[in-house]
Image (cartoon, rainbow, N blue to C red; front, side, top):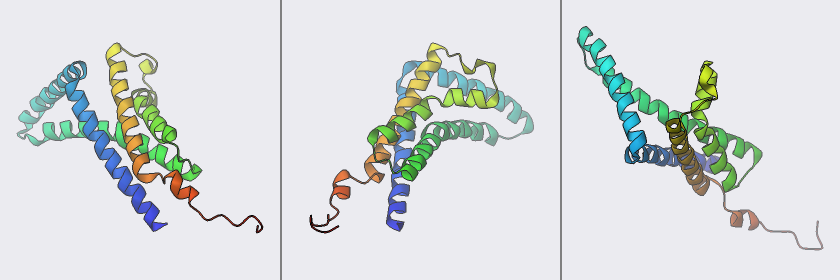
Length: 170
C-alpha cells in the first residue's frame, strides 16, 4: 500500500511539472496567447508598479506576477489532475481515457468554472481568444493526465499476472 502511494505521488508531481512546462512553453510559442498574456501581464504589472512605487517598494509587482502564473498552473495542472486521480483511484479505473480525458475536460473548462464560481454573467460566453486559451488548457490537462497514467496506473500485464487457481479447485 505504501509503495502504491509513493508511486501515485511521484506520478502526480511529475505530471504536474510536465504540464506546467508545457503550459508555459506553448503559451509563449502561440502568437495569440503570447500577445494576450503579455498585454495582461504588462497592464497588471504597470498598475501594481504605480501603486508600489508610491509605497516605496518593488516586491509586490513580481509577487503578483508570480501569483498569476502559480494560479494558472493550479487551475490547469494540479486541480483537474487531482480530481481525476482521486476519482480514478477510488473507483479503480485504470483507463488512459479516464485519466487523460477527465483531466483535460476539467482543465479546459476551468475558465468557465471560475466564472460560474464567482457568479459572473459571462459564464456562458466566450471569445475566439478565450476558446484558444481553453484549448491550450485542455491540451495541458490531457498531457498531465497521460503522464500520470503512464507512471501511476498499474499495467494490465501486472494485473493479469496474478496466479489463477487450477480448474478443479475453487
